[in-house]
Image 1 (cartoon, rainbow, N blue to C red):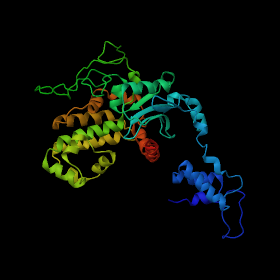
Image 2 (image 1 turned 120 degrees about the vertical axis):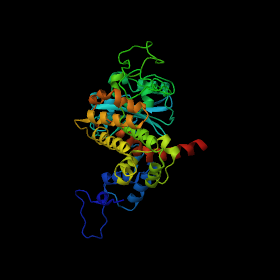
Image 3 (image 1 turned 135 degrees about the horizontal axis):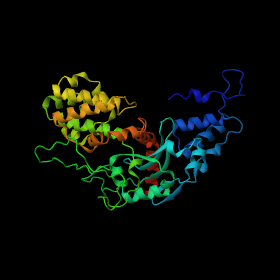
Image 4 (image 1 turned 60 degrees about the vertical axis):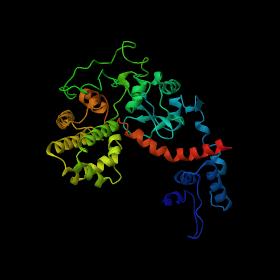
Length: 389
């Protein structure tokens, strides 16, 4: 790790020869602490060592790290999660301009925590966590409590999350896996199963849920968020359609063996579970040897899928994305790709994508998981030590 920029002498610092020590300013010390991801105690220990050796400029405080979180201690702690309900003041404290229509709310959980984060619609500003819980279960009651304490009704952000959380906040089921899983219409996920002649890819006029009041719907309770405030998760849709395509063609030994050559640790069980992630898809799209083992119809579907991923589910959106989706769905129907919830969203609700920007994806929220992971691991170790005392 290169810290040469952190050790440049500040303004007003002078020395006679190259052997003279370069004194470290407060800003440079803060940069070193941030790059090394030091804890509060280790940060103060480093500052004390440097001060004891006369390596700090005059006015640099050793005790600055004891209360470095004081300015942001307006965060509340209740119901087993921490949250901030004064969004305007939080944005002002970190130097960001807040307009509620420019931000969207990301809700998701990892193996360690449940996070609620504000993401800017252009993805040009940093993500802003506003609620955090080490209890990782995603339940209706927990999501209801979180939306209440962050005052969602006042801000009315658009919601960006995976489809399980969508089912929970839409109150379609308590487990997140209902038969009628679409939050926009009455699509039957089991339509055509075991009945010859029924094709999911044929156009069907499913009844719309938008504007329908509970209890005239199959919801358990009234929805926590209006349907029009929910954004489609582009990253999860991309992973879902790629998963169903691979499940369909991997039954042929030639295709499975080629996938095994590209991903040595791959198994049929992993393909069924959909473990292929974004980097794996990009790797597969760049391999011409994969296309060589596909039949003509499979290759046609694969090329159509690649066009949709690049022109609709990526960072940019092409003007002819509707025709690209139609071509992909026709190719999927021809080779027998099973209709999933994520394919259904492109099949029946493609117009909803026109209401959100290409940057309004769940990908930035998933990236926030990776950014927060080192801090979570450090906190988890600290918490486990405290629990054992």
